[in-house]
Picture 1: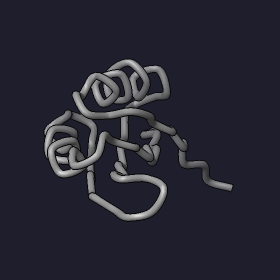
Picture 2: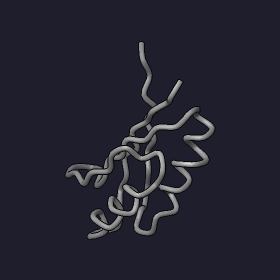
Picture 3: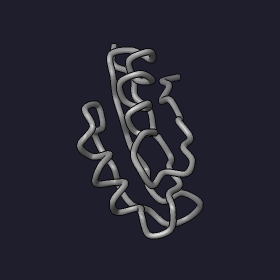
Picture 4: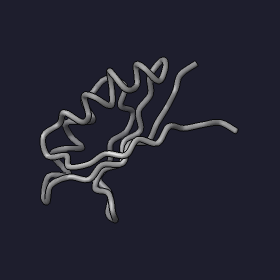
Length: 78
């Protein structure tokens, strides 16, 4: 079963476009968009399990230059 998450990202001033472009190239990222409000970029990501999501997707996202904070919100199906 594929797991999915939304990752809310705050960036340094003026870096949101660069950050979303870099993140959009990461395997497992299905969407990376610039937004306004308390976050600068919202990402939708997916992986085979939560461990892979953390190690292969979220860790790579957090390594992108210009990011100041992330918040990962796993998708659940009730």
